[in-house]
Image 1 (tube, rainbow, N blue to C red):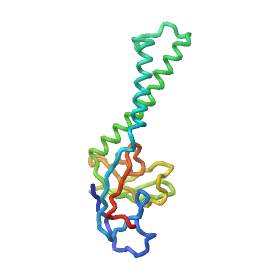
Image 2 (tube, rainbow, N blue to C red):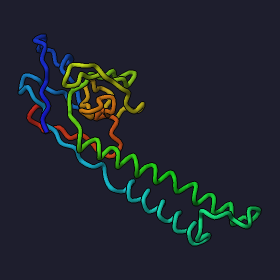
Image 3 (cartoon, rainbow, N blue to C red):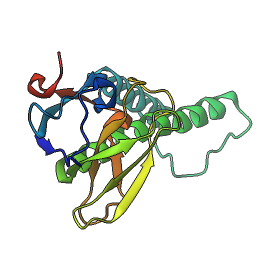
Image 4 (cartoon, rainbow, N blue to C red):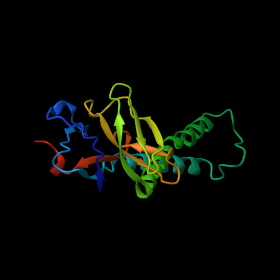
Length: 181
């Protein structure tokens, strides 16, 4: 994918004023667009969450085949184990749902460049119509020198957006044509 920079004509030869994205200084004079792609961070967290969730659900179903009926022995230790398995299966299922929602946003998203405050983690961007939106990213930045980010937003609802630094299951890879070496 490629995103175009909107240059305001105030570029200086000073490299400290150039945008920084994903830990790399981007030279906007090389080309006015930034080429990138997204890679999955790795299947281990998702596979682990899925396996843990399915195991907890299988154990709960084996202990109590009809989970929706009242449990006859509420005072037994077996009920506590069953309750813990059902309760703990919610956490991995929540991780799987957040992966699915991130993938869904990536498929339907429009991509733009947003400005990023590295201290607070707040970012803002303008959609296709010029309306301003924003959000926050992770509190622990992967690349603390970043001052811009890519923002993936839904064209139907720009308030549903995610910055490239807050993607949980994908990582941004910038193609080397626009990076200053």
